[in-house]
Image (cartoon, rainbow, N blue to C red; front, side):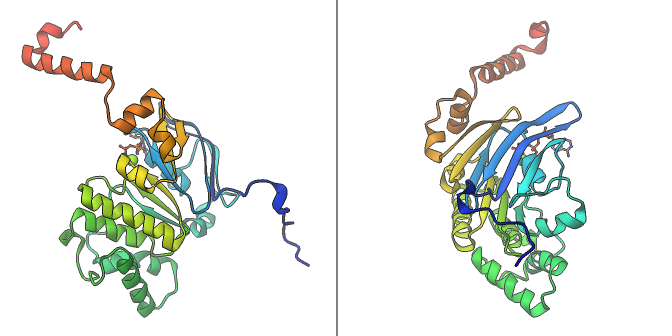
Length: 283
Ligand SMILES: Nc1ncnc2c1ncn2[C@@H]1O[C@H](COP(=O)(O)OP(=O)(O)OP(=O)(O)O)[C@@H](O)[C@H]1O
Ligand SMILES: [Mg+2]
């Protein structure tokens, strides 16, 4: 008989989320970035996080993988608390996450193949021939077969993102975190990335968290959308619920509309430029 922890009966309650964030707070000096964020992500779910620039979306992803630590609050992975784990204990958890960083972050001095092989060389004992096969397989998955020898500088923005994605999935992660995967791409290349995200969800059965400003992408890849603003979750729901959300800020974000105050500020600024600062110096 096992001496391990007793299994709870199936009727004990809902299953533990794949990732659970509880009341996360994070500030940098006097700047409060996250002010009590709690979110659950179910296994194989695709959760999209939207929100204005500087609202803490990238910080949230970094808290999940331990690149930053919360000031308070907790992060659980399969029910195991993982924030504040020492590096040695975090390492085996971290390799179960694939991260597509906001800036792509390929190593410019390495070929495409070496970039994708990098995590495999660092964290596995695969033989070079096995690593070669895995690299080829991942490149096939992102539609870039036979590009192993190319240098990142030779690639377009969309191709770089796909290589970064191949590297993010090199270790067969359980969870893939995408930080602005379509930013800077034209609509067609952005859609290629969206289709890839959907394909990876389907074929690799991963759980995904996608941070994006791109509402077309958000509605296409998300099972659930969450909007962050002012350090808090201000809306959460299915794509349909978010599309029809009556919350003024959410509506403006989804429709890409500035507030009357923002428009007024721009108009004022234009007038200032035309009329000269002096006239308005006491405004
Ligand atoms: N390591 C850090 N040290 C100090 N301030 C930081 C650090 N990381 C993030 N910040 C600040 O925290 C705030 C949130 O940053 P974050 O990068 O999470 O925003 P974001 O929502 O991802 O924005 P964007 O949509 O522009 O990518 C910003 O004001 C940023 O300057
Ligand atoms: Mg960001």
